[in-house]
Length: 48
Length: 201
Picture (cartoon, rainbow over the protein chains, first blue to last red):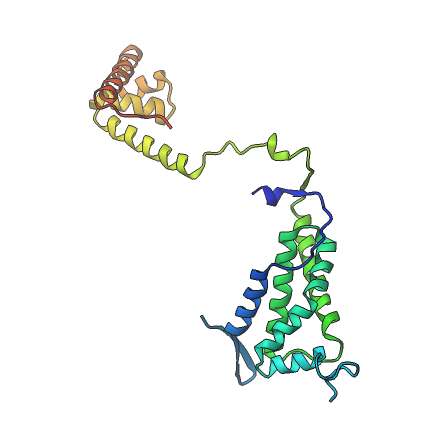
C-alpha cells in the first residue's frame, strides 16, 4: 500500500539493467505465445 | 547479405536479421535482441520514472508488446528496431504518469517517511475474523436469554431504541424495561463467566 501513495526520492543507480528473472519471463512468455491465423482474425494462445 | 553489418560480417547480425529470424521461429534471436538493447531501454525508462520496480514493469510490458507485435507479423521494418522499442517504452511511460497523476503521491526521503505518522486504523483481516466470531458468540448467548430480557436488550443495543420507546412498544413501564435490561446484562455476564467465554478482540 505504501508504494501506491508515496514514492522514494530518486537515487543514482550505477548498474542499470533489468533483473535476470524479468528477462527469463520474457523469453518464456515468447516461447509460450503462439498466434493463430484464422481467416482475417489473429488469435493469441498462451501454452503452459 | 542485407541483414548483416558491413563492418562485422561474421559475428554480429543486424537487428533486422535477428527480427526476421525471430519471426521465422528462432527464439534465440529474441534473447540476442533483448541482451543487446536491454541496458539502453532500461536506462531510458529509469531516467524518466526513477523507480526500479516501475522500470522493471515498464521494461517487461515493452517487450511483451514487442513480442506480440512480432509474432502477429504486424511489425514492418520501415524504421529501426531500437527506436521502435524506445517509442513503445516512451508510450508506456506516458501511460504510467497519466495513471499516477490521478493518484498524487507524497514524496518520501531518507529522513522522513509519511507512513511513520500515518497509519491505517482499520482492522486487519485476522482481527476482522475474530470480531465476526466474537459477535457471533455474543448473538448465540443472547439467544439463550429469557424472551422478555432478550427483547429489551435487542431493542436497546441493536435497534438503538430509547427505554421510553421500548416501554411503548412492549407495553411495560420504563422501570420494568430498565429492570429487564439490567437482568439481561447480569445473565449475560453469568453465562460468559461460567463458560469462560472470551469476548475481546
